[in-house]
Length: 103
Image (cartoon, rainbow, N blue to C red):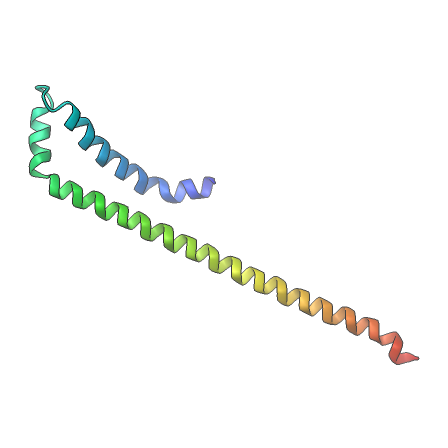
């Protein structure tokens, strides 16, 4: 769980800050201190929305890639374990047959 948080915390924080800023200023847009920020956001809403969309897309791609890598590693590990089991089984059968060959 700690590894997952370390990988995905940066994109999640960036998206949270962008959306939080937009919502916070939208709620308080009638206040005097928020008017310049809200005017800026109105002009730059497309840029902020695009930045948030790109960040979300990057986080999604990152999540899919990491999940695919982990799945691939699990498959490789399972194949390795299966191959080792087959080899051990072959050795065990061979050792079991040795006394029969000697008789």
